[in-house]
Length: 522
Image 1: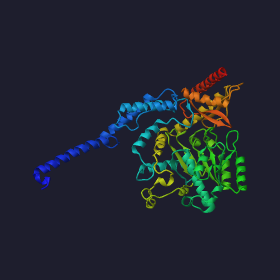
Image 2 (image 1 turned 120 degrees about the vertical axis):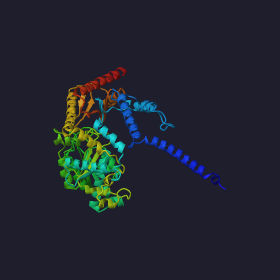
Image 3 (image 1 turned 60 degrees about the vertical axis):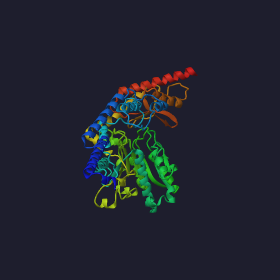
């Protein structure tokens, strides 16, 4: 006879009921514990969420330093941030935020008036608030059933952007991670369209034909390095990129472009794409877009405009004419984590004829089956190189709603005018050389004291590094025609002319101290 049968029936039932109650009580307690780790509709999870967000905000506000950077070396930071990545037991909130505070206090502070190195903007508070919503909802933008409202909002924002650029009724686009991805998409579509047109060949299904070695991409000699990077990744090689000379203002020279196209024709090579730039990274210069488009159209080349930087001019009250011709492009790159003051990442790729997305479209039964199209269900994965994507359109929409067109325009105009003022002040300094008159928000300069025999390339390189290591300023550096230069990238409309002038004077003073030190050693 089994043990169960030895029990009186009443005791057997009581035993199992008690066990069930104990199990339910235990799992309910564990469930409540885990539930507090996620944002749900329950009061417990919402209390935990508010507490975590409040503590994070307090930590940021308390840990923000007064200097643009602490000056710590990579070795210093490695020693400072030692510790277990995944401890056996959960750490206390206090200890965790103390560690986070170390990260914050040893970061580059993008809101600081002396942070002027890159196209690295201080993000709008409205956009930061939107980031809280984005991360809490965690929508994945690849299929409608993962992001229904988000999909519709991204489509609306993209279509509106296409209209603002002036690309026409067949235009469409997609949000991307930045200019690198957008430029790559443009050249990928240009390559496949060119190969289909010339050899009736599908790259997507058959790979590159042997004739692909004849394809060439043309851009200015100061265009973004992602043109070569894309050519390499597309199987064309960096030698497929033809760099065209620029004029004194670092703009692509139309006559030089015409000569380069004629040379390609004589060599039986095919101009697959011409890349015009609206906002060169170093100089902010804008290529003569209208003249380039005429040459692109005449040769059948895809005309892509890298407007990752300069696209903000579309919303300027005073300087919009500087980007005239952007509406002529076959495709356009726009970055919003530059002069739209959005947290990274936030960018878009726009296409004049959205049907050309066919070259990257693929179907997956679990994401975007054919019958979804028949039902009119939008799945944005058909337009994207990425599958999982963030709902970045929300923060741009949120920011636009919070600012309004007039205030956005005034912010863009202010940064351009701040840069012009900085250039004017720099040109008055005997020890500084101004390399160009700014078009957007960058100024390239060189510390060049009169009557010196010092190695100026070395001196400028070390001057920039010393400013960084001493926590005085975070400014940029670049090389122009073999000369090591310094660079200001003015991204903060809240910075005053006087603050920039003080920094210029500090750079000159530090340069003189370095000169004096070197003379005393020699």
